[in-house]
Length: 540
Image 1: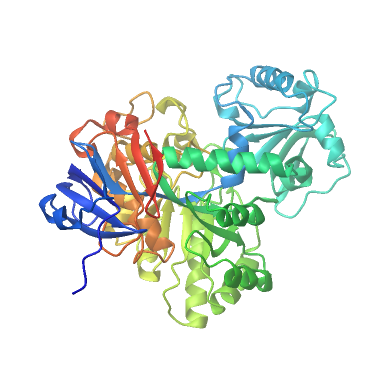
Image 2: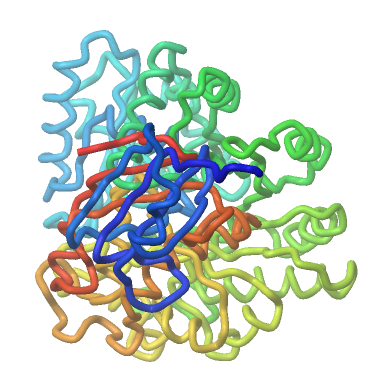
């Protein structure tokens, strides 16, 4: 008679959220190897307890599926953690002084890298100039991403290193900022950032350190899977050999699903698809940018910007090229994910997917549109109809600390405001939704996104009832969109995303039952334990 295999680990609590029901229940989860063997009451687990079974009993801490970040920039975000942060600066001069102080602590860095400045916060609200950086650092090149990572502020040394002069033409779908005399100002829009790609050639030892630091942070935050979006405008971030090296040493404590550029080169994509297929490191599709972001007027709108009526923004690539590449990649069975913030870009993405479906037939493609910061009401039902996933980042809606500084209000105007970050509207239309951080644009912590989705307030607590309060969602749904939603979006819902027998043991234990505390306590909760593939990768 075959004896029942004993559990390696049993976790129990008064609050187990499987992701299937809307509320947590008292219960226990048994793990054998790297899989969930059983879920039930503590009494149900007694026959699974052996001499080597480790038991973890919690009182009211929430046991739930591991978080799955559906859209981040792993190496870029890791570099941001090791660079100067300019989010707090309230003027161009203050930001430059922060850069100078940081540079003094890093005498051996060949480039000074920074992140997070946001001219909308500054007293004059104007884009910065290279001369301000030159006054504090002239001998070393400086490259500073803005808050959305869709533009960069550089000094004259960086322009020199990148061979950018008054005669340098704009790259396709990018712009070198120039003054009235034709001289570069030191601001690089979109793909023009790629002219300074030398800034990101990092030694192997530093790249190892960055990845190790990321994995530790992810484990501490309960993140057991990520989708690494390599491409940025003009830059291709990612380090597959390094990821593979960590996987072979069994040091990947988060599953990495990565995306390569949609650029017409399907041979390279096919090679990646056939090479990276493991449960911890796998190719997940192709990504491309349809537009930029509203704050710099580079998001593509169907009607002019409310505070700049001479522009609609624009697409980063010609629509006919987008549609051609989409058709070809879809025909070869690739899934495609489009960055689209403006309603015009969202419509272009949906049109491209619809044309590909018409040409190639209906299949379970799980094509995805990223961000959807504003949508035209006529396009709301199309995501569900076309089987397109909405990949959304609720924390972006509170990009400004105070509601009064919210640039979306002035950029998009009153008429479009009702369709801004339309999470609940898309949910009610039957759209599959997946949440993420877009790290390093905002912090990696999933609970910030959860908090923002259920409250829709800025950090000043305004507006009361939330901005577009009708778009608030329930806590259960917000948690699903950070667990099951990304698992579905990665074609792994049969393995990941809920706590069910037979699924992979990717589990997080939070410091309290989120369903019994205030939204502020949801945001401030911490992680007690993170389990990935049946192994404890973080324990408080």
